[in-house]
Structures are given as structure tokens and as C-alpha cells.
Image (cartoon, rainbow, N blue to C red; front, side):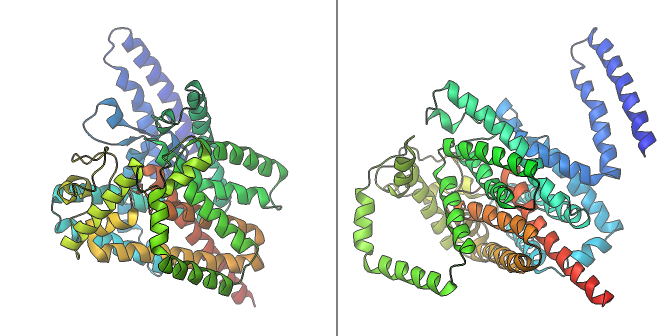
Length: 483
């Protein structure tokens, strides 16, 4: 294999020289430069599929939507073509080497729930109001979900050293994008309006940019706290955490801030081991108090006229402005549309991916805002939960919620075990759980799981949790056999 790769490298150099000479005679052959790279990647698919997964991890923060360059369809390059190739080879493996999948996944409740969710997505695509849109959505989710979940799990299971290395493989490129964005933002005097698009072309807007940063921040912070990591690694983690925290602040993404704050509070609760009974009592007090004083609370919310602002505290305060903030009012408009659509199609929904094409008639004139549109622009339902309910009915939303609940149940059970027997690994698991919490909190306000920028990272996190869990189980089995 090594000799073949050397031969291929030499052949690529000769080919590149040939193309350079050819370009002297015609300017229309530029695309031939990509042929050696494409052939090299094809070879890796056959021999080193794990390297394709790692390459995709590095490229996720740098991927660019070709729709931005006046193409007729949306596709993130180079990551989505890489994911499509991984899905194809996974399907081939399913037919020729199914033992790994059957032995490791079919007994895993979480994988069963994800398969159930995908099966329900297929069924609701068949009953969709716009079947072509739904099946395209279904196909896209196949390569967004299964390659990171299956390949990530296999890599982390057989090569545990990549469980921590993955963090840096993703965080370093993301830090580069944050540095680029910050410099670009500086050239615009850190204007909050410019802050909504200065991360382009790598991220569509400030919301998804902030989401991506919030996902990985808890992991880096856990690396800093982990005293069993080398000093160099902890310093590197500290530098990247500082860069990303600055990027999160300058993203002006209130949803990402909220997710990060919730994760921070949850982290403090677990760190100080606050008994559950106190948390439950506090929760009951808040719920009962909210019910008793709901009228007063609504009046206070209605009096809040603070719009989004570059000032951090004012921006946080604007989250509860349901009177004048156009972004908040439009989000409520979209949520109400999703609820009405779900009530019309409670079992199967309107079909995966159809919300943006069908929500317009569900808008009420008194709920429309200055940024309302009938064209399906400016995002979808602005909620993973209500979006799945509108497009896949109440069963679809319930399965989605079941996946989330089980992930955290499994994750915290695993964390409690590791805290006793492997504290170093417990830092990793806790960081993943807090990272996931940032997104699933933000998911009440936005929905980004239809993009590789978030979906790939989130499902890789889940794969990492599964690998750590199964490594622990396998280790326990070996110890029992030795005894």
C-alpha cells in the first residue's frame, strides 16, 4: 500500500506538469487540476475510509455553499460530496461486511431510536404534500446522520486516542475561521449589523456561526481543567477556548449565548453536586410562581422594548422583548404557523423539508412582522422541535425528543461511572454532554440539523459517547474473563 501511494504521488506530479503545459494553450482545462486529488480521495475510500472521516472533520468549518456562487442548488463543498461518498461505501459494507454493524449497533437502544426516526422520516416522505422535496430532504439527512455516527463510532471504538484528538482536529480549523471573522469584523468597526454576515462564506449567518462555536467550547474548557492532560495540551486548549469565546461573544447570537449559559449553569450544578431534591424543589417553585404570576410576567414582557444591540446585557434583555423586536416576533409567527400545520396534519405532518414552502397560508395578518415573507426565506420554523412536529407530525417530534432524552440519560449515567473509575475520560464525556446541551437548548429557537456545519459535529459527539460506553463495557467483560 505504501509503495502504491508513492507511485500515485509521482504520477500526480507528472500529471500536474502535463496540465500546466496544456493550460498554456487553453484556459478551459483548469478543472483537470482536480483529477489527481479526486483519484487520491477515491483510493482513500477503498483503503482508508477513516482518513476521509478525519479529512471531513477538518474541512467542516471551511466548507462553502456553492449556492452562494449562483449555482442552482445548495451543496456544501467539499464536505457534502465527501459525506455522500462515505454513505455509499457504508451501504457497500452493509452488504459485504455487515457483522460490525450487527454486533455493535443493533443492540444499542440509541441507534434503534435513530433508525426509527429515519424510518418515520421515510414514511412521512411518502405521505408528504411535496414528495420530491421530502425525499431530497431524506437523502440529505442520510449522509448527514449515518457517516459521522457509524464511521465516527468505529474510529473512536478501535482507536481511542482519537477520542480526544478529534476535539483539536475540529477546534483548530474553527479557531482559524473565528480569527478570520474577527479580523473581518474589526474592519467594520465591530458593527452589530455587519456581525450578522462577516463570517461568510464559511457560515451563512451569525446564528449558525455562534452555534458551532458554543458546541465545542465546553469540551475545550474540560480539557483545560483536566490535570492529567499535558501542560502543552492544556495551554493549547486555553488559547483556542479564549479565541472561540471571543468569537461567541462577537457573534451577537442570542440563541447561542443562551445555550452556552444553560450549559454553564448545568456544569456548575454537576460540579458542586447539588442534590436533585433541591433542583426539583427549585423547578417546582419556578413553575408554580410562573403560573400564579403569569399575568404580571406577561405585562413585564410586553413592556420590554429593548431591541437587539451590540451591548451584551441589552442583547440578552432583548430575548424577552415580544413587543417591538422584529426577530422575536417573527420567530413567534413561525412557531404559531408550525403549530397550526401540525394540527392540520397531526400524524404525518406536511412532509420533511416542506415547512418553508407551505407555512405562508398559516400566517395570521396580526402576527406578521416587517420581516415576514411568503417566499420561505429567513429560516424555517426556527425550532427543531416545532419544525419536526409540523413536518413529521406528533410521532416524529416524540421520537426526536426520545433520542435527546436517551442521549442525556446514557451520557450522564456514563459520566457518573467514569467519575469513579476513569476521571480523565469523565472530563471528555462531560464536555460532550454540555456541548450537546448548548445545541438542544438553542434548538428551541433555531434549527440547523439540516446543515453539515452542525449535524456532522452533533452526530460525531453522539458516536463518541457510544464508543466510550462500549469501550467501558468491553473492558469490564475482559476483566471478568481474566478473573
